[in-house]
Every structure is written in C-alpha cells, then in structure tokens.
Length: 207
Ligand code: GRF
Image 1 (cartoon, rainbow, N blue to C red):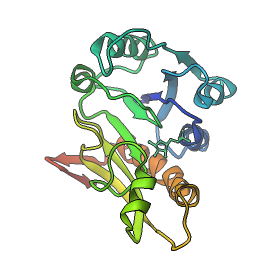
Image 2: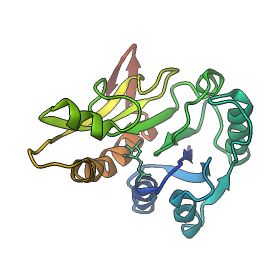
Image 3: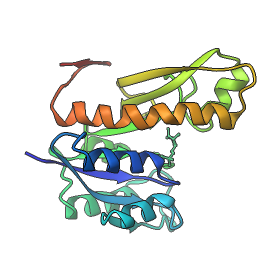
C-alpha cells in the first residue's frame, strides 16, 4: 500500500525539495507526498510544493496557543482530507518551527519524523549549528528521528557526522550539514516506507 506523506515546513524548503526529487526518482519506495502545510505564508516550501503540483496549504497561526491542539487539530484535518491518515500515513517535519502538541503526537504516534542539524542528543532546539560552533565540538552532523512529546528527543533513525573545521562559520557549517540532510532524510523515509524500522524503546533497529 502506498504510504501517503504530509510535510510540515516553515522555511525555505530545501529538505522538502530533496524529498520531492527523491520521490520523483522512486527513491522513497512506494510513497506519495500529498500535501505541504506551513504556518508561514512566505515559506519557500509552499512555492516548491506548488511548482511540483503538490497541494500547498498556509495555515495561519492566528491567536491559537503556542503548541496547542487548537492549531494542530486543523493540521490533522488537512492531513486526513489529503489522505494522510493516522495509522497509515507519514508526517515529515522539514524545518517546521512549531512544537507539536501531545495530542497530535499521540494521534500519529510513531509516524512523525524530523530532521535536526546536529548529532542529537547534543544541541537540540534552535540554532543547533551555532550551538555546536560555540561549544567547540570537532564533529557535528545531522539526525533523523521519530517525534515524541519532547523537543528533538525521539528515537534516532539515522545520523551522519561532518567535521567542524577551524575556520567554519555558522553558514559554512550549516551548508556542510545540509548537504548530508538532503541524503539521509529521503533514506530514512524509504526505510520507514519499506517497513524496515523496528522501534524497541529508544532504539530503532534497521531491518
Ligand atoms: C534544516 O537545517 C533542518 O535540519 C532544520 O531546519 C532546516 C530546514 O531547512 N530542522 P530547509 O527549509 O529544509 O531548507
């Protein structure tokens, strides 16, 4: 059965672009990106979706509470209308800046993935690349993980490391990490779609 995918994105959308490209080349397995939803009207991700003939929905935050189910229930409605159903579909966070409510996480439990630009559990949250540089680590990277109720705390699916060079800036490090993000996110999605992820507590075994 085809895995229907919904993507939540707030920014420029390069990970979305990599996912769309992979899907068009059959590298996501039997999957279809059905909808892209953004909390920001000007998100590049919405344009990328439209240009690829994927349904693109701007959902204004309005006065719904930060992280609230008021907002997330509308996301769930749009996903379900777009055939991305709990227990069947897959929700991908690709540069999505809001924290999902526990209700939403519960509804799509085990079926939400995120990409984060550090080697978790180091440097969760915002500005991960800056955090890594300021800490002085010699290696950083990116992580694809399943989403739980915490911030960047869910079980880890894939990680790739990159060196941190002496003359790195936030931009140069971010660019090196981003190139790897564009490889491992589609790869993790394919593993999910092919049913090859086995979640045992915090550990995700690849079958
Ligand atoms: C990426 O660095 C991703 O790891 C983080 O947000 C950024 C999104 O970039 N979660 P893009 O919008 O996919 O270009």
